[in-house]
Image (cartoon, rainbow, N blue to C red):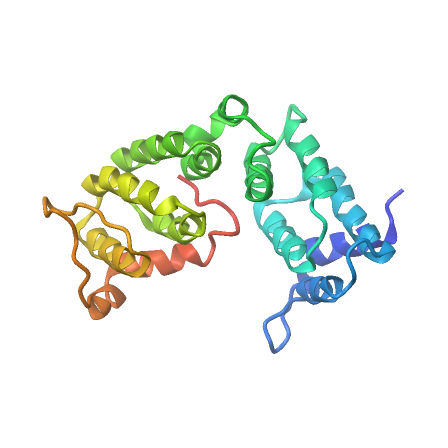
Amino acid sequence: MVSNETKTLLDLILNESNKIPNIEGNTPLILKAISNSKLDNFNKEKENLEDAVCSLVKHFAVFNQTHFAELDSYISVSKFNMQKILNSFSVFVKKVEIDEDIYLKGCVLRFIQSFNKSLFQLDYIKKRFSELKLNDPWLYAELLMTNNWSEGVNQITDILKINNDTSYLFALITNWMSVGGNENNLSNAFNTWVQYFSEDDKELLKEFCKQYSFTVKIDKAPQYQAADLQNIILNSQGFTNFKTAKSCKNFESIPS
């Protein structure tokens, strides 16, 4: 039996007529999440709301990646206790089904890893999501990167060798920079990736070097010395690609 809370949540996520934002840009789903966030932790009402989220795994068959992205935002804004939600979502990922949506399951795993990257081991991820390596390589790279940095770097290198469109890569940088101690990792990674960049991408990379204080060898120079590239960057195609990709980085993965 589906609870009223679950029915309400499904309606807010699946019914397009319930996605019209108010004057402040908040949809009914996010307004509900804001209201949830004001409840005390371990409040019975909040626990019921968390249980409703857990119960949604039974309905994920009708979800697409955008639906899950909206649920992701709802959970984050609601400030829920994550443990039972992660447990429920993990069961969904591990359940092997004949007609499963492996792309959606990859997005669910990405969500789980953002809270606890130790729940799934690297070998399991590589085997379970091997299909993504060919059909959605950027999502596959994200899953590897969270679990094992060097594996993710190698995967992105392979992607860039085939297609040097870096728009999705630049959209991920700010997420990676929020991880403590990642500056050196990123410097080393970009020293590998930069050889596949267009000239426009290199200019964009210089701006990131300046803003986030990491160094990359570009065009055989010892390292880039920060300069005022504001006008160049703002008018570059690379920056346009970055802004476009950044706007959807928390939603569905970009098809290969």
